[in-house]
Amino acid sequence: MKKMFYNEDLSRVVGILLGAFFVYASLDKIYNYDGFLVSILNYRIVPLPIAHLSATILPWLELIAGMSIISGIYRRGGALLISAMMLMFTLAVLSAILRNLDISCGCFTQGPAAAKIGWTKILENTTLFIIAIFLFVMSVRDRSKSTEKIEPTP
Image (tube, rainbow, N blue to C red):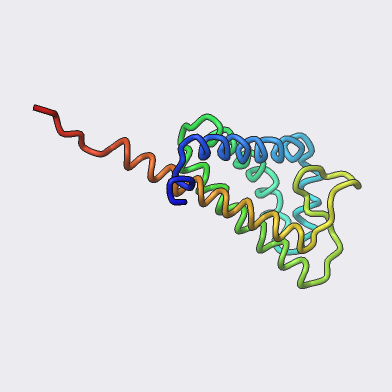
């Protein structure tokens, strides 16, 4: 069982899928800044200046983290960044649910067809968080393997 969770091929495939997920999620937010800004404001958590900053930075962080995981360059940092974002997104959704806000999540599209928040979104975000933590742990393990001192054979 332990070998399955420390499988480099599984880690690569999961990394590509998670990275692609975040690259895809970032694109509409980058191209539709105003819509994403409205989505952030709908959560009623941050003031307008912070919402502007978030709408500017978050999509690019998603894109960079996703590309990082896909390419394997700074994979551990990308996984950690996605973990942190997923924790933040989950707390925002939970806050909105507990305050009975009827809003869309702002995850993939900012249009009227966007999915509404709910407990399913909490489950999805938690799953993505666990996957990102898995990739972070795997990349730490891979890095420690590559830095082990190799003794010369006589």
